[in-house]
Structures are given as C-alpha cells and as structure tokens.
Image (cartoon, rainbow, N blue to C red; front, top):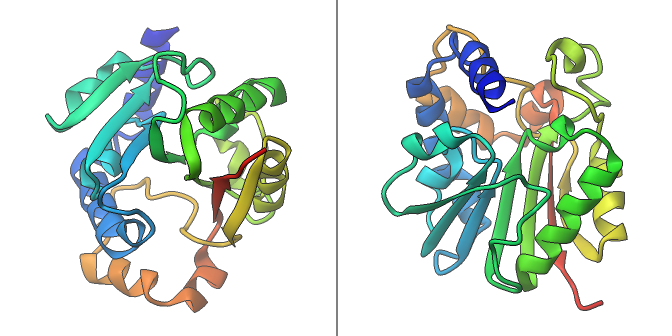
Length: 221
C-alpha cells in the first residue's frame, strides 16, 4: 500500500516539479497563511506530503504527520515528523497543538466515518480555541476535474466541510468558497508576481478559485 502511494504521488507531481511547488507555497505562506497563524504557535501539518506548507510557515514549533515515510526526507530539520495515519493521532498529546493545517487531503479518505475520526482526533489534540485550517477542492466548482484523480473518493464543498466540523464541536471562523485554482500541476511556469497579485485580488478568486478554505476553532463543549 505504501509503495503504491509513493509511486502514485511521484507520478502525479512529476510534471509540476518540486522546485515549483516549494516556490509557490513559500509565497502562499509569506503572503497569506502566516497572517492567519501566531508565530508563537505549535503548528501541525496533517498529511504533509512533501512538506511545502510546514517548511515555509512561520511558527515556533513544527510537526508533520503523514502515512508516507518518504515525506520525512523533504522536511526541514526543525520539523518533527510522525509517521501515522491521520485517523489515528494517538502519538500526539491532548491539547498540545495550536493550529492544524491540511490541504487536499480529506477527499482521499475512504468514507465519512474515517473523516469523523480525523475530526475527532484533531479536536482532541487542539488546545481550546486552537484553529483547524482546511483547504481542498470544492465540488461545487470543480465537479468535472474532481474525478480525474484515481484516489479522489469523498466530494466536499465548503458547506459540507463546515457542517461536519460543527458536528464535532468546532466553530466556523472563516469560509472562502473560492480560494485557489484547482491545481498547480503542469509544466508551465507560474511567475512569483502573478501569485502575489492573485492573493491580493479576491475578485480573481471568484473567477479562478476552485478550492475552498475553511478556518474553524475548537470551542468548549
């Protein structure tokens, strides 16, 4: 299973190039995500992939979780790596994390019960008022290309993700139904200035954005 996962990801991102992904995420963190996160926070990147987010985000302590052992080789030295499934976060203590981030992951889960276990686990490890930042393809706007990936299973929108989070004791702080374009895959270059301009022009999100962004916080329950 792990070997298949490693091969699938290597094939999927072969055209994109890791350098391009690193560069894009560096800008995303500098110009957007760092504004959402206190630099003194402990941040966990759930299903971290190649570590593009956790390597670039500004925070005091960094943790990365992934089932793929290859992920560790792409992480900076200051990132603590935990190899485990997102449905079983028992290696992390209760109330130990300020911010959990995940991108383009929940749609790969096998069913809603797995998603429930992920949400429950995240709520357990988050401190009170800690935040869960979720980004993923929005089925409302990416309903055609959504199924072009073999391992896309669960279709989500910003509304269904928000409803699921509320079910598990989260309060929804911010919802952007159309944020980033669907994918950065492809060999065409993406100039840094274009990315920066896009992030500063929410009007462009309404035209090109096909991924949602939801920020939720753990409330007393």
